[in-house]
Length: 241
Image 1 (cartoon, rainbow, N blue to C red):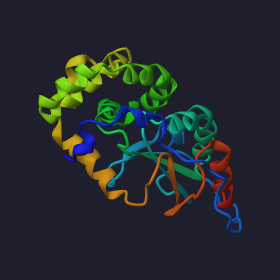
Image 2: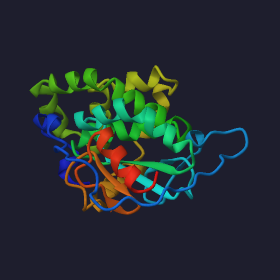
Image 3: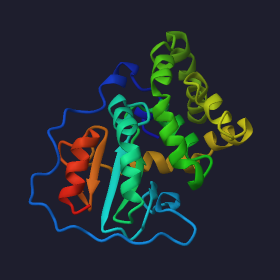
């Protein structure tokens, strides 16, 4: 595991995203067609893990495929989620757009702790937990920013799994998921799962096109400058959504 994933400089918590100027400037694509969801479901309820390690919501054959690389401790990602998740979900329900979220561990171990616990309940709870973590982000960042130096010194002697669990406790993530139906024993078992940890580390390592969060990819192309919902909405419309 890379050292940056063990102890992140907490002063970086406010510097994860850049200023955007809008979506891609290419000519708009022709409008795409949606598709009906499986009987008794909405597309927003159809969630699965992808081969790349993210979780995708919606029609797997949607003509517009959106991927977000995001950090759960990134204020810019939180601002996008609080403004954009509701209208984006409505787009997903048309069957025209699928939405995949891939955790990008820009802030090291605190991101890793939240990402592991965000997956702990499986596909059904992945997006509700993600949305609620962003809704609760301000309180989490307050806890992280007030982390005493003694704690950061103490965890240096811990093994990586213990460090991740310690950050989960420090940031309040353990109590957060317990309040949402994931027992503490299950949460701690997830935090100790080195296969999941390595999967998340690998997903970050392979995302060489990502220089800040959030980063949005639409049909394999980076949506340059899009960090807010209005900017991303413009880019999705240009893709035909």
